[in-house]
Image (cartoon, rainbow, N blue to C red; front, side, top):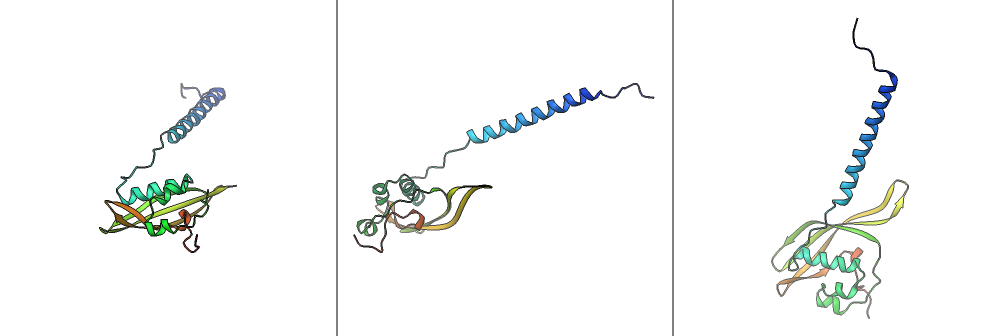
Length: 157
């Protein structure tokens, strides 16, 4: 016969309740830390293809067409028939950059967020490419993905 008496049901219930409260508190703390510790995106140098694409994309996102035009080659910017900037919420992620000396390509992943559905955000994702040319030590965009265009080159002014 054992000298140890079994735990009374009330004590076991209290232990389970305390364990559950602690587990929920840990999950909440981890979620809050994840939200508040999110890093800002890396800032690329102004004189790099990635930096040019980053600043152009930010100007488009801000609806600042004049600033965006400053990152385009003059042949495109000078003949630009402006189009309304699409105000969709987008995330742009650098995938790969290739510098060939006088030209460069920057491949990006563009995720367009259309709202939220019953199971989360409605998103469309596509891989796109910026083509750039070197200009006085910096870079200018020759072609941009259609999601981030500010000029309709098929129309005349």
